[in-house]
Image (cartoon, rainbow, N blue to C red):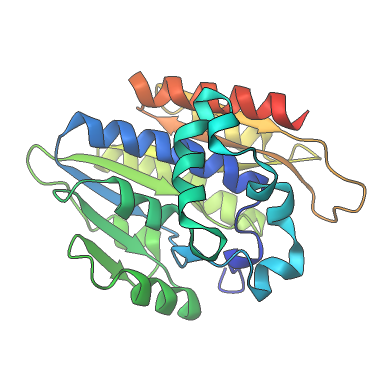
Length: 260
């Protein structure tokens, strides 16, 4: 949806879980020291000013990243991401494309799709000097399917659509099985919102049944003045095991303790 801009929600509780787990999975890929093609279908702008107008209008970061403890006092599973993000400061909060460029090695190829004009412009300005990065202003689902990993190259696809309408869920549910058939060895990370009315349950169960991997999620107590219907979030990792999966489970478990 071209109306969606993540700056209003950057650094919120959903971002905390999403980015902490993404940080862990990217770190595991970097440690593996193997060639990687990393793709995002809905990249947004990459960096966010949590003191800026959009963030201040909603105040969502106050219950998210700003409510987190200092890295040295945080639970062990959360320390790597917190140390990373707190070192950047609120004016340069790293979204998922920024995390990828900051964590992945020079040998990685990074392809980012973003259709929203303002978000694409900001992303291009932020990352245009990084030779590893291709930024494409087109539909991420169609564009990604034209890509192919090179021989010996691992592949990780990050999917983070807006979920503004049921059509967003339908599009993702149709695309993921198609992509898995095209890339039988690719790994997929899918962010999933958890709604108070449970509308995502069948959809999430379908996605998580497509292959082995993990589902790591956390819920929080929704304040009475919170107008959103979101009360948690999860990350689905298809074909992702090992250290990445173990760290994802540990992160979700610690956030559950902090938020309940």
